[in-house]
Length: 332
Image (cartoon, rainbow, N blue to C red):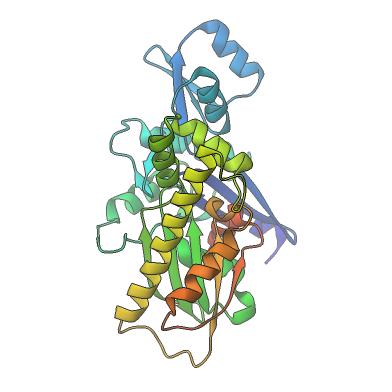
């Protein structure tokens, strides 16, 4: 495939926490990301002009300025506000009337200037474990949004499967992909690129943030910033916030491992691989130092019916899903 045609293919990770766009230029995959969030402040022309000068993504509506993307978190922290989410638990947030409009604006900020006629593949979550909810509305609505943005060819890919496409070429796309995101932790098992099973658990990054905020009295947005900037396992657990984060991280890890054990043990569709398979961890939730070791310890203790050769981190955890979506689009 030529560089010119590859530029007209886009992979999109549309997650609760972040929206990431991926394109292949030559032999290099390029990424652009924005926080999938916004904050509102009272409108003034002075403030609006200041935002324009700094190229801060924003919109004006009903006497307010809506600031979206990465800058929303910094401004919310400065003003003592909580960020607002266009999505929750992996799908559109029904409590936010402007959710679809905000997602459209954030998606546009991640895309290069010229994307007319591009082929797009976007990520979708798996049903949460034990609740086979209908994800048709979310998937169809995002598809329609992208078509309205001018993309004539739009398809979707399961988030956990996208991790496998991105990271497991060396095992012919056989193994387990785990994406620990803001709203959900998505898990998928594939055999030679064919999805065998997938599920999600609701104990993602937002669960950790809100739970830790509840026991420490801090704002959720402040907890999120502390977590992303300084949390690590085996760190200063004398600090109440760090201790709370460690507790709820362990809760999230155990939920994913328990989900794997339950699903693999109860499914009649799990193939007899004849060999152990790798497991890849991706997403913002896996970034703290010591996470991989913590996860592997819990996994080994669970004794899964499908043996795992290794537990490894994705090469670029924050961009793995977008890269997998890009690979899925390029393969068509």
